[in-house]
Image (cartoon, rainbow, N blue to C red; front, side):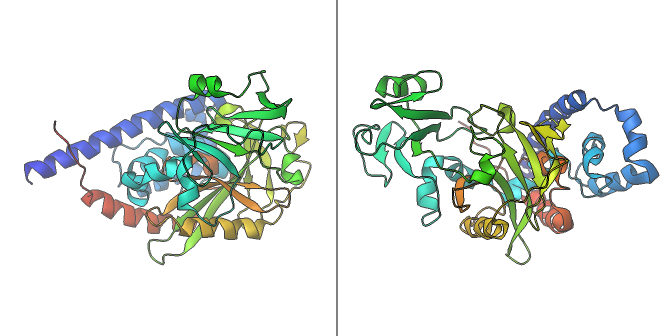
Length: 381
């Protein structure tokens, strides 16, 4: 083995260990949040040698693998040998299925209008890209608020184009010739220069499906739909889905901002009977709704799945995608965001089942072989 190969192996190991350390920190938060005693949990969740079968399956990818991820997620979805450790998902699978060089272009929301031409999305009014202002068609403009006085939608959304998890998203309402947020701030150039500076977009707030709004009317409640382009057949498959619901009075539905999520049956869109937070806390009631006593089905579910597949087909360099989809007032799907990289597997392993299910072996065999031969670039200045 030459020095380049040794260095490449060492660097990959270093990066994987960094990912692993981060997820072990997350596991500790989860264990504390949901009060799991791992010793007693082993008796309840992994009796009958389940943990040994699981460990035999996954230790080939990490010979020092902790069973903590199995202890946590088997509590929710049972003794599923396909429960994937999140460190393996992020450290081995994602670098192969969603290569890092292609992630950034999809991570910038200002790119979506170009990358997904013809796909239904919220109406963009203005955008700022690296300090330069443009209209919805990417034509340069001097003033990002040029639309005020010309086109005055009742509500608009201001959001950073390169942030995740709802950070920086603001709702403004039109009143007396200006847009004002819930805290009384007026949207003007000084506000933009102070809070956002650059790389943001302004969109007309969608009028969401009354059915979806019933879960929380103050936020746009989105469907997080995971898709996988098979490495064997090339076909797009729906892996799983959840409905994200904002907390009462909140403007965003993200779990990291106080929202909850509920699993959806990927075959028919039926809503589960429990909601979850991002650390695994669960409840049957949220926003005054008892999910255990009422039956909900996402309207037009077949159209949602078809839409998700059509969007994913446009992403040629990503086999693993998490789409944020809203339903408009007529229950038609709209693309809010395409998450290529940063795949949050905990959504599904809390609420619906193992991340990859029937595709687990196909994916792991492919990714492991590719990962072992992947070369990591080293730049020396």
